[in-house]
Length: 306
Image 1 (cartoon, rainbow, N blue to C red):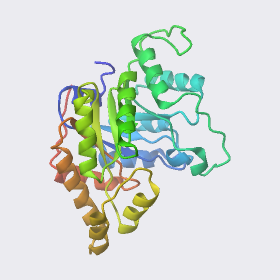
Image 2: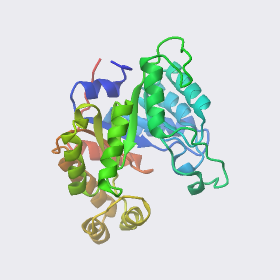
Image 3: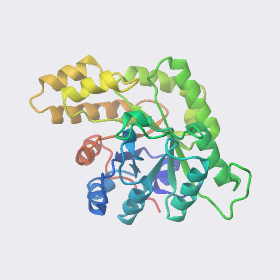
Image 4: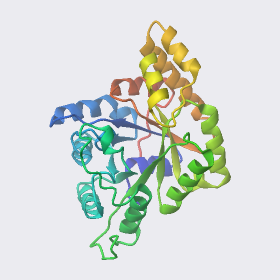
């Protein structure tokens, strides 16, 4: 085992994993994080704590992970390159591991001009692939980026994200290949609405043997309204929401129930695609829907591994 986290144990045991993401508060309320943890921790194997998602200032991911861990959940520390240089990155990695956090997800981060401090200076000292390489060297070689030795072990289960849908498609599989070669242990994808295109991406990943070198978790976002579906279609790069989904959401008497049904149907199809080792639910401030979707998708109870 590389870090011995619950997520690593589930994936390495060959069981179909379930993760979900929460957005920390714009404040210091530990109660809010505990409430989110209580809502989903028994329905998932690990919980991502977003790192100033969309470049909007919120409680730090490390703090959220510590609170989440105290509730009994297995946290995934999301680390972006946007706000840290290599010194801060490596320092935060050591601090997170010292606090018992074993899963770290490597991200470039949404550009700062998209958030609530558009005048902030983006750092981007290294990119997400270099971040994966740095974490692998810290864990496997006990080396900092500069080559200096690290005192002691740095057990990390290294994650990254990938978007199967942006054009051109061949570039996306190349980028996945680079992340796998850099040393990622698991991949969480962008939300999937176009099953056929995702299946084609997975087929190429399988042909290259990438699905045996990393664990791919397919992203799922439950839609809450037709307007939300149109917003994702129009404003989230690479996202392709089928017209059929938008029509179903618009015609539904209860759009939230319809959105949950679409998510469940999507999961049922994803479970049948070779090489998919789990799902990652991104509820976008709708965390309370996670248990129902997981249960109705036939993914409860979650495995208990010692």
